[in-house]
Image 1 (cartoon, rainbow, N blue to C red):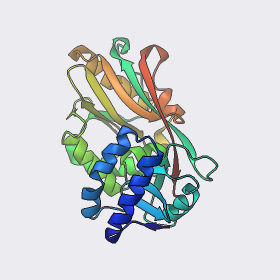
Image 2: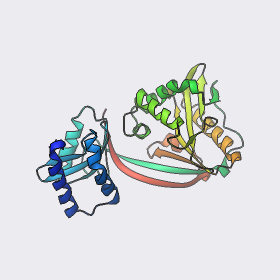
Image 3: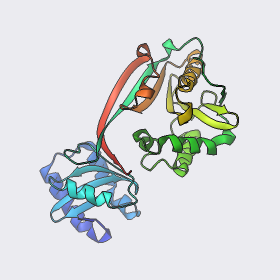
Image 4: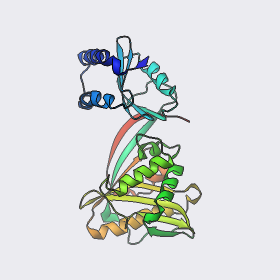
Length: 282
């Protein structure tokens, strides 16, 4: 099996034609196909793999590949090919079948009703200082995000489609504070310090006049169990509710029980599930 290259345009065209003839093409595939040539020509990672008359179509970056569709029987060889590339950190697909080393991922979108915001934040059982976002500590924030997300599926989504290194976390933070997910809100994005050491944070963006997006909540490993996460979460709820915000939106993987437990049942306005499979190197 080989990735399609610049000299394979006719072969890829033929493979796409065969695929269209055999399958009903979902809208997301049609959108992907429409941008294939421009993206391929720009030097991005190969997005089509060929094996005789069979083809597979792959989305994503150099480090994270998302298998959109593959001809029957081709998937095991395709996965082995992708895993053999040391630059590939993760592989995602909608159905792993009997493939080894893939884990099911349930990605939940939660919406929480701010009418149930507490009167005051829950206490922290440690001598920590919790302050609104400190711009000069952004590099420390990237270090913390990388450390707590290095081997988690949530971390894969944090820096999608790349591995959560210090560099990629710093890039995500720069985008977030620059408005990539709405208006960044430093007054309800909190940092927790033990002395001068950053040990916890929340990142919040305002999507519109009523909905805020909790982009991330992170606590250093040795400070978990102190109530810090709930305290920071309560702090942002207490701050947002009087300003007319009605909902906090938050994304988390289904296996992350600790994060799910931060929200009381009566606060949950809605939940939506996106289910898939992922392989992460190491």
